[in-house]
Image (cartoon, rainbow, N blue to C red):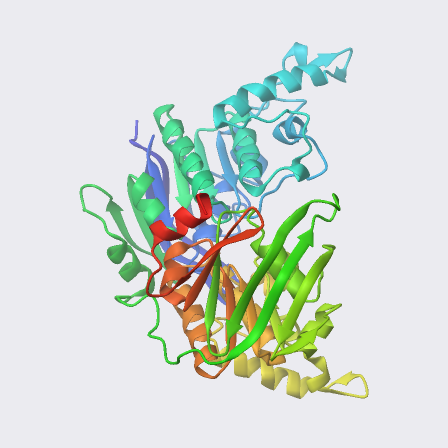
Amino acid sequence: MSDYILEIENLTKDFPGVRALDNVNLKIKKGEIHSLCGENGAGKSTLMSVISGVYPKGDYEGKVFYKGKETAYRSIKDSEKEGLAIIHQELALSPYLSIYENIFLGHMKTMPSGERAPAAAYRFGVINWDYYVKESKKYLDRVGLKESPHTTVSKLGVGKQQLVEIARALSKEVDLLILDEPTSSLNDEESDHLLGLIREFKQQGITAIMISHKLNEVLKVADSVTVLRDGKSISSYDVKADKLTEGMIIKDMVGRDLTHRFPERKSSPGETIMEVKNWSVYHPDYHTIKVVDNVSFYLKKGEILAFCGPMGAGRTELMMSLFGKSYGHRSEGELFIRGKKVNLGSSRAAMEAGLGYISEDRKSLGLILIQDIKTNISNSSLEKISKFGVVNNRQEILAAEKYRKDLNIRTPSVNQLARNLSGGNQQKVVVSRTLAVNPDIFIVDEPTRGIDVGAKAEIYDILNDLVANGKSVIMVSSELPEALGMADRIYVMNEGKIKGMLTHEEATQEKIMHLALVG
């Protein structure tokens, strides 16, 4: 019997014009936590999709061995029958179904192994819902989710939805659990809980593969690490035996030492360009509840201003409401731009006043995934490249090519669909679209969420160049090192209120956490 639950030999996978995987080799030991690291576009998610049967046998070259037997999966259903489950970064839950329905969705009639479900699961040929409610509680207990199985998934936060996904995987009698960026949308507390679960599963004999850009978490939980770069397997480490460090992983990921993660500031802030006074935002469903409560702050020209705080603090609602009072939140208060009071009733009015907004949810609110890169870039600035309502295709292509070059968007063509780009390159397209509008004030919400360290450094350089050229940036960030490394000043929010403000010189992680939790 082999010590390895999964073995990959000389795996190659091509897409039109792109080699996503190039002769990859990988071995995963039984009962270990194995982390897969690499820049966006390195091939990590493609590799996991091959392993799990998303790409069937015949769509790739090379061999995949699972539990000592070469696989020939035709779909993900085949891999699930053998105890392999994958949880993608974009959760695949049905938002309008209950927790217990989501857990057993797709395998109520049969067990994951293909055998018929127990007799208790049916009454006279009709699904016994009470049976599945009771069964779901066992899996909810295992993941520590204290919610009623009847709760509709759309009413849960991202962290709890992640736990529902894991409970669903456990219900399929999983032996190998693949998690793609499991903590990218979670706060510190939720992340610690999830990492603790992965350790518990290891004690129960479940093997885990974790794709993550959060290298501190990788070193905290992983037994071994494999690094991919440009579709190739570059290195594999035993975390303890090799005394693995973040620096070693980063060097293999980007092909060079990345000693300075944050750029040296090139400018100093000037006069106040924006001021917010007594700003409140109301819950879209419960109109008397404030999600942002009487907030006041100011922004200087040439400044990067960060907003920190736990998830649910009201930071995103604040930024959305300032950008044209949009997305269904009623707001009140005073907004001044360049000393003049303004009333921005729409996103278009906000852009005309010199504001640009980059959402934390680039796939739902930042991009049109079925459109190509050039169209996504030009969507907010069509008036600049059109005449009498007709878009000048040549100008559109030239503009897109400029941003492709300036921002180093890795793509064979600006005609490539946005959905085919890696996370980091998708983020650069969103930034390009906002740059095309040429605002004076950039609001960027979680600008580096879910992207690798190399792409992060490029985004940081872009923001730094903006303020060096006299622009101003408001940055919402859940990563405290990012806020500390980039911001001139930091506002700390919690429960819809500003708890305090720290300058770059006085800010520390401890002080930020103290303000958020104590005030």
